[in-house]
Image (cartoon, rainbow, N blue to C red; front, side, top):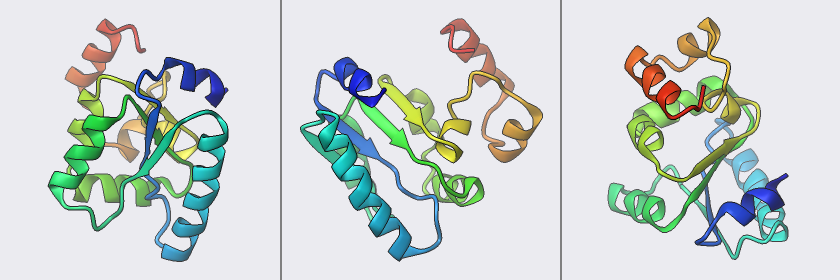
Length: 137
């Protein structure tokens, strides 16, 4: 499937936001696996957001890619980390492809449910209308 996603990417770069665990060791190990996997899928460059990245580095990484991946893991940890760094709006306004797995997919779900909205309270009714207009729901 991700080889097909690579075909949609004109930059050949993917940004991974691996913040789905409180364990730094797990995050490092999982990042190695994800790097190898997406490289194998044909992405020439696999970038990662680090929890210590300053705002200008986050902006640079977002501007270089047209594909973002949100991995599976602990949904609450992912939401907390995105909220602390105020990335919700940036993700919502991202013009490229956003893909996810498990916890990461919840933010990209085509089926909006009460549990999704309670888990990701930054999803507002105006966002839902925008998503519907874009035929994303």
